[in-house]
Amino acid sequence: MTERTIYLDHDRRDLRTRKIHVRAYRWYATAELDRDGYVDYLISQGDSADLPTAYTEAVAKAENTSIDRIWYDGYPDGFISINGPRCIILPVPFAQIEAAVEALRSAELHHDYSGLHALADQLALPIEDWLAPGERELIRGVDFSVPPEVFLNFLRGKAKKSGLRLNGRATRGSVWVRPTLPLAEKLRRERFPEQYPGWVDRWTGYVEPEDTPFRPWVGGREQNLSLGANPVQFQHVQTPSGGKCPCGMNLRASWNDGNKHATHHAMWAIGVRPPKNLDWSGDLAVVTTESPIAWRKLTYQMGRMPQRENGYDFNSWSHLGEPEKTSDNIRAYLLKANGYVIGYVAAHDVNHHHRWDLLDGSNYGGRDDTLRPSIDLIWVAGSYRGKGVGATLVQALVDHSGCQVTDASWSTPISDAGRRLARRVSPEGIWVN
Image (cartoon, rainbow, N blue to C red; front, side, top):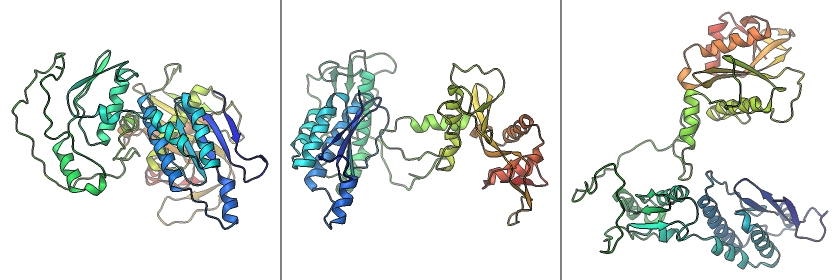
């Protein structure tokens, strides 16, 4: 699919010109309406830059139904909505990109929002029917078109967002579902109706008709072991419901996050699995900006671990283009154990340092211009911390650089964990840059 720009005004050179950028991604395409210069012009003339309510409602409707359709097709990640007066981004399946462009053009130039509504109607899925109460079998090719496992995963996400328990199972050509409303969710919605406008309880008290299809038993647990059982009682207590996990992810994940936190937490705890196409013949690999791209991509992935854990703005490794030689000898050290990369050091050479005795509140000493290896960042997988891995990485760096541990320089600011490591390997003080 060719990416292109469609100009909505006659003079393309005018900064006020509105334009639509068509961009392609792996799972979908976007029609991005750029109104930035146009909004600046309106403000300079004293006019309001706000979009009409009918416009924003039509965009929101088209965006929501389109995102559902893309998730239904199997897209595993989330979306960030930034729509406003300056920019409107509408993600759509590839087949609908031309309709999305025309709908945005008509809305912007002629205040005709019917195209956006038509697009939303075309992409709308019968989610309410799929999540209606009752046991039933949804047939691939009749009720849905994507692979059953993909469809079931999508339905689980929508059911969770609606507070339902799906009770679903995928077969080779169908998906069995029995949506139910847990008592806790029912009570929550009845207690806070303002948070769930328009919600109607269709599931409590639902009675299966006599001709309800029987879900075939596929082995495992015996059936009907809950027949006649008493419902579980619930109580309301204060529980931790947010905040940060030590790995850097949020403890409260949105419904469509899937296993992103679990996957990241596993890498944070035991390390990153290197690609199978890398021939790793030793314990420690030295990656430079001239190394093959597979090694540099792995190094970038390792740099993501401390970036997410500590909330850094930038990755400590960014060399993903063509191989290049750097004047300051930028490099990284990757330590492998038990089949995973468990340690990472980012380093370069620098010739301006000051001496520091590592005491709280003490000032730096005089300047030194010796070329020294700089320890820019050290990260160790969570399960290996406190076992001397950090000291091993420092020793590997100085051995490769042909100097002693006391000769290395440390990039500031130094974290508390970094200061503890520095005191362990160089108790008399360190060089800092």
